[in-house]
Length: 178
Image (cartoon, rainbow, N blue to C red; front, side):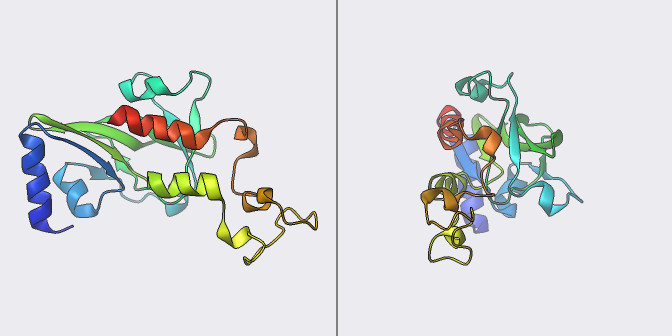
């Protein structure tokens, strides 16, 4: 977004406004004081997981037996710095020091940032991969010689989490941030 738009949003925040951002552009992230982590390999932040920070107020909407959620698409790795992480990037069975969801304040206002594109991620949870549809590059991904809705999700959704309504829980995190 343009510099005048960033200035307008910052003025709104300083005056007591509230912002909820998904994968903000570099200019906006910098204006909010978000510190992009340097040297983080891209594969650690794409098609990964978030680990819920249970002590954060946003996390109260996620059931206590769910400690992490999968997300789809790329995320930007932020060091929490002076802000508070509501969730961290979780990859390869280990918690990373990078915030996936964080909250902070500017002046009298407050903001929440999702480091990944929540809308894209949820759409993919519901619709799967187009490339694995019967008309896509990899039809019948399951190899059972039939075209079923499950083919859209083979190798894409964590089968250990198949009973967790992940898209709904991401939406709960979003609504809690509001």
